[in-house]
Image 1 (cartoon, rainbow, N blue to C red):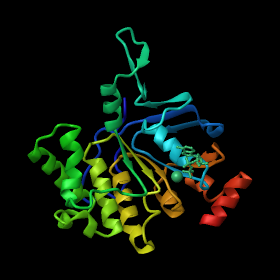
Image 2: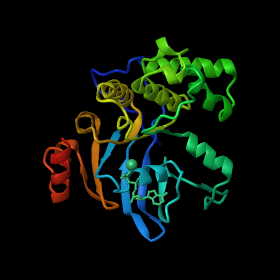
Image 3: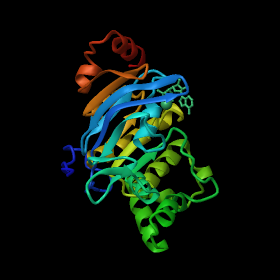
Length: 274
Ligand code: ADP
Ligand code: MG
């Protein structure tokens, strides 16, 4: 069972939100190839309830592929991923044995995992609030009023309530990404995955998105964040994972991996990016 953690002191979320159901996600010996290219070469990783794990590493090292496996957008060739100790893509029959999951079960697991991409992909001709309401309406079957209430709560949480009626295309990149975060939160996931959420933003817009992510982490969400923002990783992560060539080269507390790395490849990467 997931053990809720108290928010870290001094940084309660903007809307005073506390995550009630943070999940645990565990990657076990995952291999993944595209044709003859082995992209993940045996990845194992534990992300505890309420903690933030930051994944860093050079382009092409397999970070996005790992997140896509965690979100069930890809299936590992070998190994598996567990969400709250249930294998993703499988379900237990009445004898407790794992069976390939029915579509409904896969959908339910997927709804528990929120994902935020580099490109926010909002519907440009819909307002911020309409964008946030779509998934709760269509996937969860919420009434219009319930979806609206949920969207208002989540827009408040990311500091976008004042712009709720603006068309997405009229928002800045940072504002769009905050709406995209609200959209993911509106499904009430137990884990949030972020794949380079600030890489497509102009530098002056990065800070507002990172601040929202800090707030959500402080509220007790389980987060896995692929990022090149090493200051964010240093301040927020419980664990930093450095990947290169489809393997985890080094992982541990940010004070170790970022400030005192042991492996040559980590030292080189960190000194280039910091
Ligand atoms: P990162 O996110 O660390 O930059 P990716 O996971 O995107 O790395 O990619 C790792 C490697 O896998 C790269 O060499 C990339 O070209 C390859 N790759 C990723 N997705 C696919 C795909 N759908 N088909 C073929 N090759 C892919
Ligand atoms: Mg990537």
